[in-house]
Length: 300
Image (cartoon, one colour):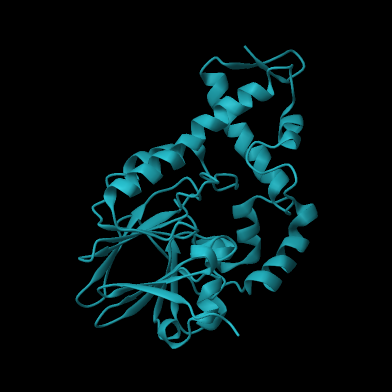
């Protein structure tokens, strides 16, 4: 028998916690009950265990587009779906989602099979785009989209007013640290986002994964600082990886910067290459790493 889904209520906002507070591959589901419109933020795996409370949603706002945030869309074929205009194509078709991820053609078919099997993946060609600052009046409450890119190009924080609930999405404050390994991701944009998110006019912060809900600003700020610290830690680790001699991008990716060496998934090699390449760009610009005559990276 499936355990009941834990629920936290903050006025018209309900948070349904996924397995282990939404640890990937699950996530945390937010539902906002306006007097005119019921809205869900994303649809993680837990969406499939909530029932009528979610199934009554008339609008799905995706804070960003990844497989684990669309795992309940198949339950809501009549609900309108919206995502930021820089992410929305990835909702509409598999080809666009594959480009969004940036996975190699050699693994694309296997990844599609995995998404269908494990995340109930269905494209939504009817999805429409929203822009930074978009506002949805729901009746006695409203939602505002704040563009906070980096994780994906269109990643947004969804802020519920007047409750002051900020759905942070995959600014998830986990010990894994920020993820910016997709074709649509950006380390530089994530750095700017982390500086901005600290100033959100919120009293409650909801993460997609594993941390769940913060109701104390001090604890939120501490978690945010620890999350952001991973960026410099990765730079330092990459420098140490070059300490014993020059290495190519492929060699560095094989050593792993972000994922544990024993962790294997279809996207990991691509994600490691893109992540490391962005950190190398920073380190080269700072004069800490250079390219040798053979096009390999060396610690200066």
